[in-house]
Image 1 (cartoon, rainbow, N blue to C red):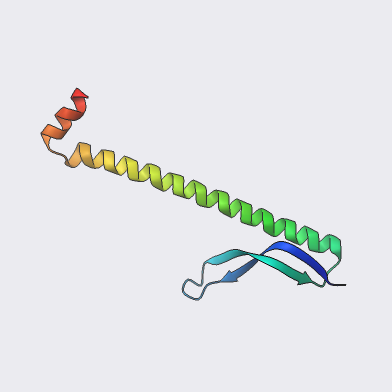
Image 2 (image 1 turned 180 degrees about the vertical axis):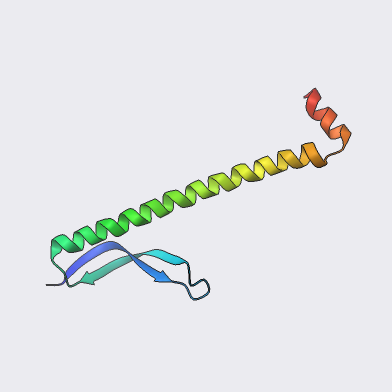
Length: 90
């Protein structure tokens, strides 16, 4: 029996970066499996997608913090004495 499942993710390797997996949502997919197995599969893939989304948000947050630290470090280490004096006065 074919079971129609929506919001299932597809995993594919990209040609440009063969060691990277691309996970994307597809609208519907027909799976010739028992309904319980198909729903379990959809749940696992959906959880993988959710974890990937959380990781992307965390990485973007870390990158933002690193950029802010770099800007501060650049001002303190590479700036002129006037910039340092102004920073201490503030």
